[in-house]
Amino acid sequence: MKKIVLAIIFIFLSVNLTVFANNNPNDYTKKPSCKEKKEFMQLLDSKLNFTTEQKAVLKENGKKNRKEMEKVVKKMEKLQHEIKAIYTSSNSKLEADIKSSTKKMQLVLLKQEADNLRKKHREEFEKILTNEQKIEFEKFRKELLIKKANQ
Image 1 (cartoon, rainbow, N blue to C red):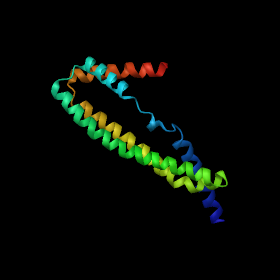
Image 2 (cartoon, rainbow, N blue to C red):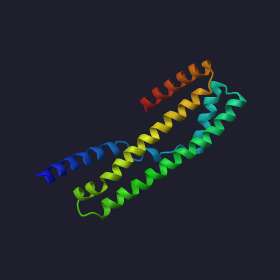
Image 3 (tube, helix red, strand yellow):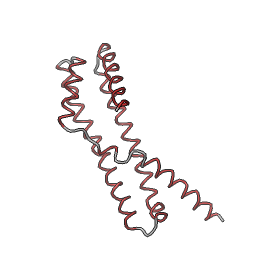
């Protein structure tokens, strides 16, 4: 009886994790092109008028932040490939769900880690802004959110 209850709980958790993990599949792999990044930074610079010191700090932080995020993204991609391999090699979906459940949990944790890194990086970015720039940045951010919502 205990085994049946544990199996049901395990299946329930794996199904919920699958739904959660696949909510935005491969969201982390959708990288903007270099041209898009450059255009975005030029637009941001034109809105906020960065000083040369701020630009230097942004460049340095960008390199450091990119390295941190790349580590997490590589782990996520590796897990995603492992999960796909489990599903292609398994005889049934249930068997694959059970075998891949720990990897899916790890993937969820890595997505949370990536979100935490983004939040930390944004906080670092905002620390270098003056009060006026912070106000302009919030306006700019809201404009982008509205554009994104309308697409």
